[in-house]
Amino acid sequence: MLPAVPPFLVGVIAAPLAKRVAKPLVRGVIKTSVGLTLEVKRAVIEAGEEVQCLTAEAAAAKLASSARTRGAESTAS
Image (cartoon, rainbow, N blue to C red; front, side, top):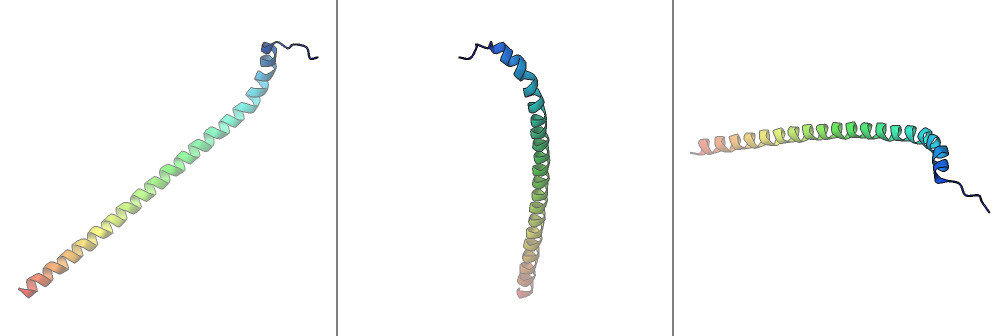
């Protein structure tokens, strides 16, 4: 039969070990999270720029089409 070990002794022994293991693990998780956040922000900015470019192209095409339509209407009159 195992002798009863007071829980505080387990804590006293396990705490330094947990600190040695948990600290690098938490540091790695935080570094990864920050890196991932920066990558997501960069991707969102690039996507926004792409949408702006496509919007500008569509607006230019619409204006060109509208100008051609007006030009054809004025020559037909």
